[in-house]
Image (tube, rainbow, N blue to C red; front, side, top):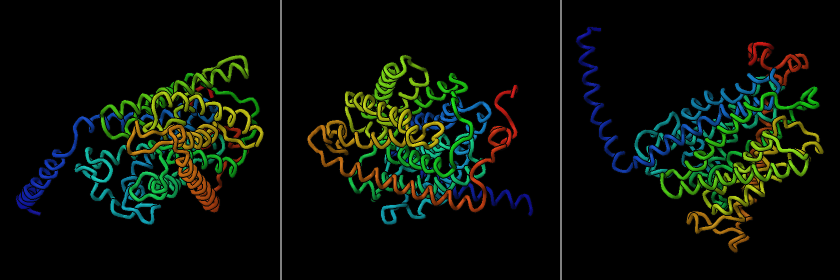
Amino acid sequence: MNTKLLDIIIAITIFISFPAVSFASEEAAATINSGDTAFMIIATAMVLIMTPALGLFYGGMERPKNMINILMMSVILMGITSVQWVLFGYSIAFGPTVGGFFGDTTFWGFNGVGVDPSPDYAPNLPHVLFSMFQMVFVMITPAIISGAVAGRMRFGAYVLLMIAWITLVYEPICHMVWAIGGFIGKMGALDFAGGTVVHISSGTSALVAALMIGKRRGISGVRPHNVPFMLLGGGLLWFGWLAFCGGCATVANGFSSLVIMNTNTAAGAGMLTWLLIEKLHHGKVTLLGAVTGAVAGLVGITPSCGFVTTLSSIAIGILTAPVCYIAIIFAKKKLGYDDALDAFGLHGVGGIWGALLTGVFCTTTVNKAGTDGLFYGNAAQLIPQLGGVLVTIVWAGVATFLILKVISIFTPLRATDEEEKQGMDLNQHGETAYSSL
């Protein structure tokens, strides 16, 4: 083609496009709050850090021969989610409802998701920013499942599980809880930052996966191989969790500040309670226990952080820690399942308990969009809370079972005896975390 003609075509295209782009930006500026937008950009980045942080947290507790594998189980989700969410995931989660269970195809390929506000969910923010904040939630949630199957699940099968799980479990449950017209939301269940959407869904699926794949071989007496890595990962999780919960307010004001304070306070209460239990049970306190207790408090406060007072957040941290401790130390041993890094014990059990405690401590004095709970004279709120828990458990449990059954038709789910003995790092990835291995 003649270069001069090509230049003319490009110039005409830019001329036609430019006014439309400028118009969209001016319209967006009329309603978008720059302070809220800056806050949510930072919150999105902080939550993004949580996915590799979970890998460090889990990796420190795993055996050294599986360190790379457990890190990859988290990191791969950053790639999968970044593409799937844009193609169709966001539309499943937040598109106009289809029967209250999932969204339609309105936002496929990010159609209509741009710099203009999101009128239905965040009129103060660019629609694309609201969507990206929700996307980083998707990244970390299925990574929690990796803690239950660590050390024996083939990486290829795990990737297939993650793609299917995000599409068939996370996004429909997200829609049911948070989307307009969602089934669980219409029941009246309260979940501010993901007790059902994140923790119960992943915790339930983690238990199902652990049971289906079976126990690890030769795990007697296994201890965390790198406690400082565990602390680094746990500390970054705590750091990101403040934005995980605070960002759900979608505004930079006193309310989001209260949510962040509640989140942090519950973590502290959970830590101290766990250490007290450890001291009474074993006579010593451990760094692993301190971080685990903090995570238990964080899981417990997640659904209620925007509905309760700060004093109630202390109670939630104190009450969640012993329930998770019992699930991890006693129930797992008694029932005989191998939840390698306690994904179900912390996230599943803690999420269920936190959802129910939301129905106890929620109050309209904190959030008029919520309701009063048992502690404020409304015991009936426990009914939709329990309903939301049960729907999430059934949906996540059945769907995960079916997904794994289908995957197993095409590829083995777990490594062979020899592969597991060698370590997942070498036989699945061809590299090791430590040069001496």
